[in-house]
Length: 135
Image (cartoon, rainbow, N blue to C red; front, side):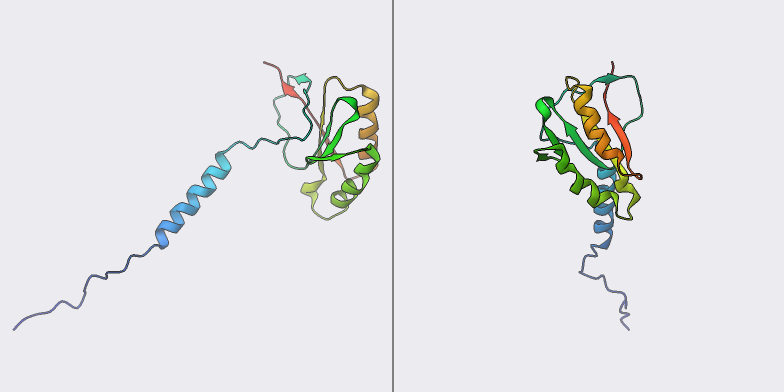
């Protein structure tokens, strides 16, 4: 009497566990990587001793000669910032309320104050002025 095994090995390969591992690795590398924001205007930030990095929000860059950019989009006049600010500061997403202001260290206070004045018109705006860390 020959006994046959009912459990035959399956020739199929289950790839569900591989996709889980790849997904976890993707999440790990996304969280562990450093994000560098590139700007359309080259500026030299002033230095500071602060250890707290800015996070989230949108970037407004003020360069020498009155150059202004909103999230890598160059704006001709500072008054043209209003539609951009209106769009994201009036929605319900509070994460969008952070404005990172990057000002070249050679820019006069007069030019910087003009941009800060436009941002301050919106009550829910949270202004973060970015600097380079001193060594």
